[in-house]
Length: 132
Image (cartoon, rainbow, N blue to C red; front, side):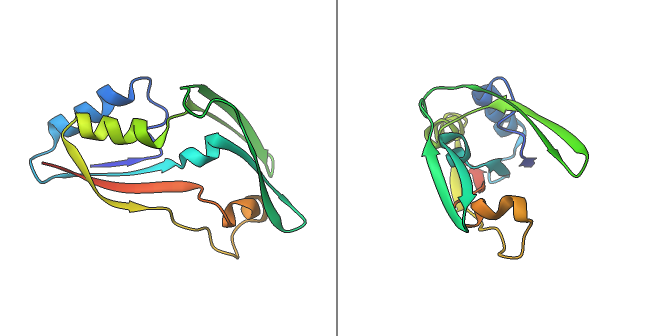
């Protein structure tokens, strides 16, 4: 089962992960990509080619996300919730899933300029969890 940038938008992460685990056969995988929790932990910007981060208050607090981004005439609205690494980990653990792969892929140096600051900090977190 694949959850691509979906787990951070559900109202009840624990129930969603439990339902995913319920439909998996033993030995089955839940593969997920989420916006890395560090994205919600700090405001990251690029200044003179260097990434800088300003820590936001309340990393441990579950907070709603409602961001609108406009680029090249296209407006996108992103809604969801902030979660800590521990919250994701505990949701998986509580559902009987065990993380067996964890990745923080770097963005390529020749990627879009508006993502320049994220070339030095993780933007996405990917994991694979197996049902035991």
